[in-house]
Image (cartoon, rainbow, N blue to C red; front, side):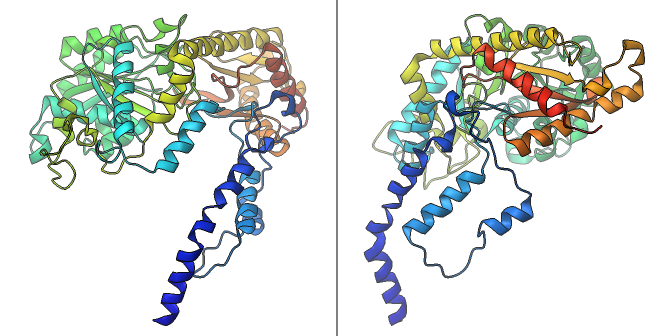
Length: 507
């Protein structure tokens, strides 16, 4: 007992000293090689000093033990190691994912959010943050053309898409909430073959069954074919299913393709189906000045999902689900009477207790960092940055065409800020009639090999992907985001670097 009391006293007495770790951490954050955001330094800074898992385990003491005694300096050194061996996603040459460099105002908001450690269920526990979430949702609903509208911030796009399916099911069959799906005809949803896999996962999680997530064919640009959608709906009805939900993708993961929302809305209205738009990637075009037409018809959708952490530079994660349905449908669908949280006899307006609309109880505050960015720049400036990223992507296509002996575009013109292409190494540059099926199979091995070189060199990170829907093997998928705000010379560097690394590979 005395030993325990002494240990507790020691921790209590040392607690104020422990808080000084923040000074050490802020010192690390201010080092220029933590974020790698200065274009003058990119040539010198590695995106990642890549090591295989076994080697990394040897270098960093990962073991968690019952007793530890570390000084603040030792903890700082450990943090420095973690930073050093992590991928610098804000490095201006990181183009590997659909997100990229952070907006500094977003990071400032994220740091304050973490420090306040609130939770988004009630106004009581997160007064300012609750009002901010309500304001963000209301603003985005207006931009989408929703007269009333409602919404919630969710932990990622897969969850936001699942909110859409749950809400659609509740609207068509509210009794499912209490009595389940026993004895019902199978509910069927429809989404394009190039859409995100989260719809398939949601069909599994929600008990619809992944067989009832029907894949719709796409055209050569990656857009959903409406005649095939119509045919698949009729097929589902003929085999005894009950169609209830159609998803349109606004910005597919690989090609960045946008389905025709107006055409899908016509089909959905004709069959009485809920129309959802997965705009997790392409939702940033809502703010655009020149490319807003990419999501024309969004106001006709019953709901949509958008991840401002993609394209815009909001820190991970920031994901929204929005619906034009009013009458508290979102709340009626998701609420249970949790009396210890959502008491109705509180001393303030309980309509600001957003937690009733959510599937979660504790919910991380993700609205503040986005709101702080909008307060710093206004959404008009982000619209300009979205347009700039798309413009740079079209310029990259031009530059790829100028090197047509070495590079080949997957699409001549992409719709958004993704650009997909192949690199053809010197040994494979042949006349078009020599480009046999075997030649293509070899070409598909090039991108993974160059990617390995990229990672070991730390000079550039670009992802690669096949496209099974079009029977295409591996190609590069370059993604441009609002930050860094690239100049055209940087595009030349990217192509030169792929060529440089491409000469080192053996095929």
